[in-house]
Length: 174
Image 1 (tube, one colour):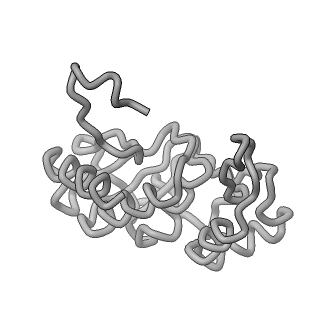
Image 2 (cartoon, rainbow, N blue to C red; image 1 turned 30 degrees about the vertical axis):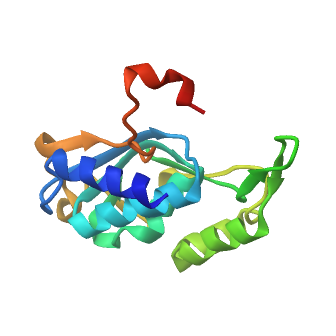
């Protein structure tokens, strides 16, 4: 896991993500493993990069709300956050709710997000969506003058780990 995080961090640096003037745009992120998002967003936070949410940010992607400084994140009218309880596969590969993973998510979310989740049924297997006017007071709007971003320096983002696989190593893939 540390190697993956280092590779992702190296990839971010190679892309020139070293100054606070860069902008990362999250548009269609369906989530994934919590640990990967913790590492990815920690690197983004350290870079001082601004984050624009402009579409779906689901599951573990929602950790952006607790890991990126509030003044460095904004949402467009298309932004939609999807929350659910953490899960992991059982011995047969079926999803089983993970109380420890769900608690980890909960501990990272800001208080305003926790309150919204509580008012909408809590974290369960069912995904609940935060979007539109409900975002007011939780995430700044990107069209506010104090939150305007410079779109010419933006880049697309994927929290999936970066991994180089040689062409002749196809048998090593999972």
